[in-house]
Length: 154
Image 1 (cartoon, rainbow, N blue to C red):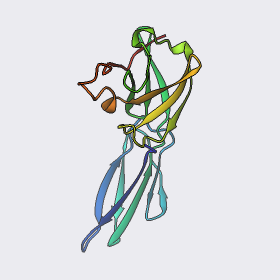
Image 2: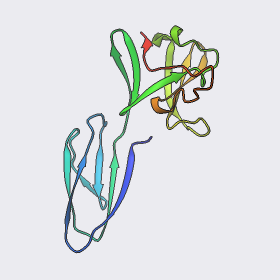
Image 3: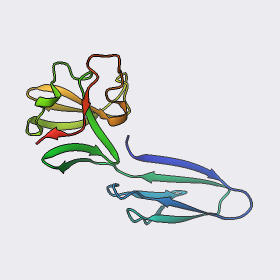
Image 4: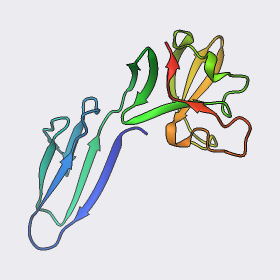
């Protein structure tokens, strides 16, 4: 969720090449091999030469929250992840009535005990609502409140 990755790689005998792809959605990515900063370009591969027995690769992709607009509808993404809003996590919320102009102050919050990988809290008409990563939203098909949406009226 924070876009930080740490990889430990052990090699035998001779140096090895490793390609790391930096996704184009990344905001200000950084890469370090054994604490040495390596120049990267978004959307491209970076070649690393592993020449120590034990190597530590640290990547920071810095995902950001973005609004995506298509056909007068708005969706929110966080890095490569689409955010969804579901009825189960948001009492007394009618999905069809959602309007982006009333949504403000989206911020990432701890996902503990919310059955989700990512949760964003937002203000909507003077109350708090929650967006989840799409893969975690609307999971309880046995619930009468299992509907979800990614696209919201502008």
